[in-house]
Image (cartoon, rainbow, N blue to C red; front, side, top):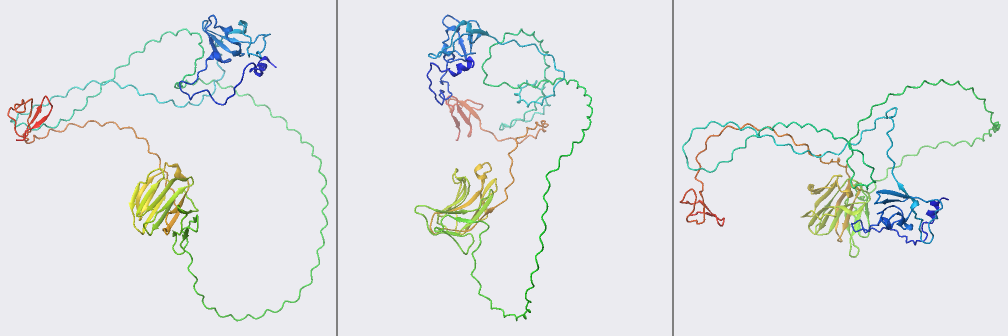
Length: 526
């Protein structure tokens, strides 16, 4: 057994153990416990190299074979090695010998010279994954402004009319063409490569991984080796001897003799004459009318003492009793991934719900609920009812679920559509469930069945790139001079409304005055 194996076996000599499943961490925050290297056994440790803090000052219980220590004053690494004649770890205080001879400089070898190229270039590897998209380049410089268009010829001067209202602003002229891009300056010469510095200690792994460099150019393919000559075909081996024949097959036993034919029976009697046909019996009474069948679904009644099914009208169920302080239910045996159900409410005033629920319970219900004269639509118990209205006796209700949309119908008219494609709860098969909350409450014409699922609607595609801006249209011709506008309100300013400043010293009705101190606007009314 080696010294290291013995050391491993006895590594707890002189130490007490406190096994504990868990962690000292307080949750990953900055105030989590931090363990100092020189308080651990082994690992990479650090000493300053000054008096009292050198290699031989490390407490022997914290030394482990092969551990490495960085001496700051020397900028070197030293490795601990067991010497011949060293004792094993002390059984009373768990220490190892610590002498200067146990420590030797630990260095990483220099990189060897590059080997000669191989005879043949290997196959080109598959193309690496496309790198992430580069960031958008800086915006280019603004081109020089276009030259100013020629000034149009001046029209003849018209007679001066009264001041009209301010005309609309003229259209903005077309933008000048973008100036040509400046030429790229010549690249500076590459500086001489600096000498390679000494290999530094391996740093801690960074938080972020750098971008993957571009794939280097494929090396040239080496010349293909010549094909070796085909070996000659070996001579055909001789046929081996035939193996010995197996044990003899036993003799077939003799066939037994056929038994004697039995004596013939007595003579068969003559066939009697055919009797005359009897008279047809009278027609029987018509039997009672059978129960009306269901539309291919099977109702399961939780308690037949509380719910009865009509023997006359198909899909009709009514409540005869209730448990104390509760309600009673019935449901379908069948379940479907896409389905419909419909029914008629012959009366109003009772409390009743007709639901479709999935196999994972009542978390994703699709239901109609009735209370008094109010009907309520709901799709999923996590959302509040989103449609409430008053209904009448004899109204008909229905629901369809095609895998994309839940559609509620009221008297054959669409009342509400809810898109539930993304709701995973509705992807499980659904049953129909009826809850009775009142004695004598009744539901009629209840049907339930499967429907084909709707085609899956794909996600909306991404918006296409914006099209290029069309060229500016040519300027329109100058319109005719409009009629003289009515006189607008004059604008005055100053401090005293009775002595305003402005273009006209005598304000008229409708003119506006601005007090330049208070900022208040006044209008002359009389």
